[in-house]
Length: 139
Image 1 (tube, rainbow, N blue to C red):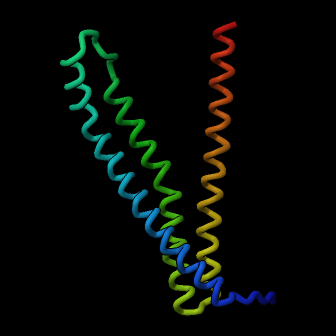
Image 2: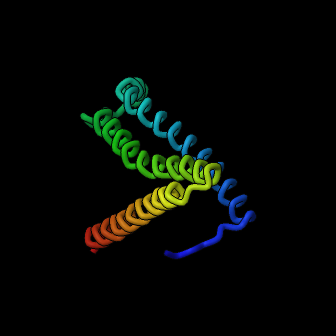
Image 3: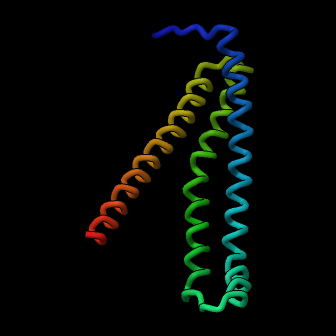
């Protein structure tokens, strides 16, 4: 059995971190809600745009845009969920002085950063792939 003492300063830092994580996750959930609202009204916005431009817009633009916003909302949901769960568990762990709840809080924080890390690797890989495709088109 390993022992790790969490000092009062560390508890204070963790409590403050949990509060900021809760704020950021709630702001993220609001952003997700806005993405879904935009996805719902994209058709109307594209129709309004269509009437104000001289060139016709591509068919399926509103559907493609809606799908993109829904996918972005789904992708963004999970890290916000993990961050919110970290905040909740950390607050409870510090309040109840429960090691199992503290462990669950850190598990949620790990899941958050693991998700963000994988998403970053995927994003960088896509950038490299598209740059390669662009270079092949130029050559």
